[in-house]
Image (cartoon, rainbow, N blue to C red; front, side):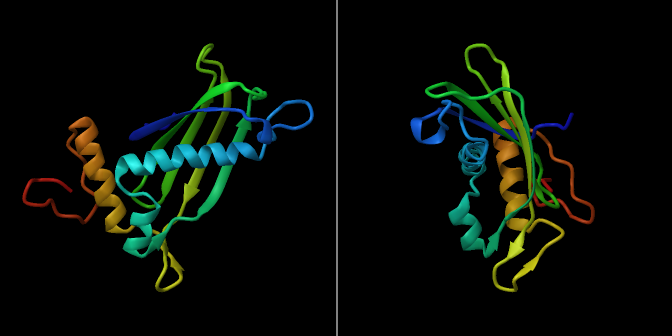
Length: 161
């Protein structure tokens, strides 16, 4: 199992407009729920969509894996947790959808996002410094940890990488 670096949770409810005629949430709506949790995670890091755009980058999803374990039904409340797993070369986020009462797993998923330079139109194989620095600052704030240095990166005056 991968190590969670940072996480954020949102609590939602399956609404009428998300269900089919059998009152079960249509499978495609889980992606919308994941987006809400991903936005909460990136906001907690201090690097949400406005900051990405201002820095000149986008992070499109290049890979998505989903495992549906149980159905969500009309008016059912659920919690979705988005956890940052990797950030130095790509953004990899795992998702866990749970029933808040029973703690039953409803859904598991993972997305991979690759940095895309908006000015050149090219994908990057290494995350830009603006993302790396934002994540490392959030890690220091959240956990008070000493972070390992990226290879070839010198520590700053405070000893951080």
